[in-house]
Length: 86
Image 1 (tube, rainbow, N blue to C red):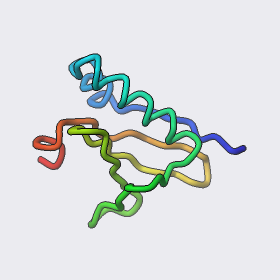
Image 2: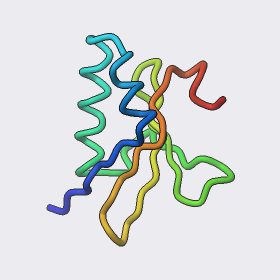
Image 3: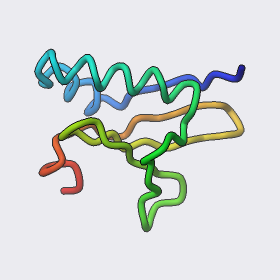
Image 4: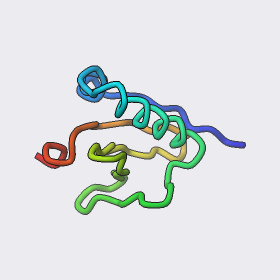
């Protein structure tokens, strides 16, 4: 089984520290599942971006790039749905 490596941007690392614990567990579980399947059900490609995708985790959104040749997922942003696209 091929596993992708996940790298977080500084802003996404900071955002993780601000998420409440009950939501944080779900976000971390989703990040772990992205290692196995970077394109899960409900994943949407962002328009205007070459490799950017988003996945929903409750009221939070994870925006990430998939670099398939190197098996890397680079998490660009993790934020509440009201703030993520600003």
